[in-house]
Structure formats: C-alpha cells, structure tokens
Length: 326
Image (tube, rainbow, N blue to C red):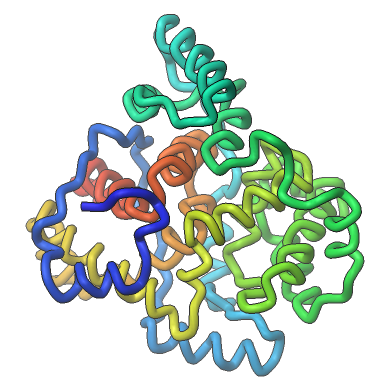
C-alpha cells in the first residue's frame, strides 16, 4: 500500500482515512518484538495536546507532548535499559557483511535487505547499515565547523532542552550523570537541530530519538541522522501544527486495531481507552522512550528502511503479542 518512505505524507493518510483504511494489510512477520507488561498511557486527548502546544509556544516555544503529571508516572519505568543481541545464524551474518560491501560499491539498496531485516541487523554492523540506509555513507550532511556554529548559536529552546536532557534515559550509564558527557552531547545535538530547523525547532520526544542515536554515533553523525529522519523520511510532519498528520496516523491505527484485533478493539472500547492515549508517545518518539533498547534498535531498523508505515506495523505487532495481558 505504499512505495517508499517519502510517500507517507499527510495527503496520503487523509486518503487512507477517507477511503480504504480497511484494505491495509500488516506483515507482522517482519517484526521482532519483546513482550512487555502493560504500560501507563498519556491521559490527554489530541485537542488537549494541541492546546498544550499553543500554550507552550507562548511560553517556551516548544510543545509539551507529555504533561508533567503523566511524566512522573512514566519515571517508574526504567528508560534506556535492557539491550540485547538476538541469536543470528552464521550464514545471515555472512549475508549482512556481503550486503554492506555490495551496497557501498553499487550505491543501491540490495534486493535481499528486506529479507535480512527479518533477522535484525547485527549490533556491530548496525551503525554502518543505518548510515547506508539514510544516505550518509559519505559522511555527515554538514561540516564540523557548521555543526559547531549551530551548537554555539543561542536558541529559544535552551531551557526546555536542558530540562529534557535531565530526564532522558535516566537509568542508562551514559546519560544518568548530570552534566556528564552523555547529557552534554544530547543537549548539543538537540540545540543544533533547533537552530537548523526553525519551523519545528525542538519538541518534547526528540531527545529520546537523539539519545538512541548517540549510543551508536558521535554528535555530528547523530545530528545528521536526525536531519535525515526528519526531512528525508518525513518525521517532522508529525510535529506539524495541531498534529494533523499524527491525528491521521491515529485514525488509521484505530482502524487497523479494529480490523486485525477486533476483540482487543472491543476491550479498548469497553474501558474507554483510545489510541491517542498511548499512540502519540509511540509515534512521536519512534518507540525510543519506554521500550527496551534491544527492541528499539530493531524498531529503528525497520523504520529507517521502510519509513512511516513501519510505525503502524510495529504497533499492531506489539498489541497482537501482548493482547492477552492487556
């Protein structure tokens, strides 16, 4: 139902919403997921989120996706923990090495990459594959001098970025120390992006995406990868005015739950649970906020290679696996 990550745009989602959400199929064989316990959710409607964005813009110029009262509830879940390496046959490891070599020589995506993604990307090769997928194999998108200028330039989002860096991956060794190397790098990349993308600036949730990138790359490559995610794959549209694209995604997500998991959809309806109560955090942070790092890496493998549609695939797969515990 989609060709290429760049085609998942607002108008396309409106078409899905109006015409054929029921016709979508979810290939859950592509998803490798760790079963998780029930998670707390954001108890805010999209209208409230939009109002929060408006209020935050008047104050800090940055939307508060997670209200403070709910943020305290989320702190009980260890963030940025449980990294693992899935077992992988030796022949698959050999295939991945071959794919990377061929990819670098031909500059074209190998045909068998999607098959290999079913097994996941080996952790020691992940950073190389990610850069190839988003077109950064030749280096960062800007020079070190340009990046340093973006970091040193004053940003209207500095206070909110500083606040968020103190509560991002707080249980991870690299980020848990106040003003440590991890928090300083996280602050710098987020500030640099806020100056690079004046339209979006900084939004709550981006710090988790950046933090995950920093576990694999240095600052300038993490910044470049974020730019490619936001512009090339198109994730910045999720942070548009009134969250219009996010609303369309949530509509399609709700329809897919109804189609693929009718009993769970009925259960959600019975208890008054709507996708907008937990979906925004999943989609806006690309699952990087409150899931095990091992699962997050595999989710990002899919997202970077398949684009926005993978957010729906992964979400339905997680609900399918965990539906008996919900």
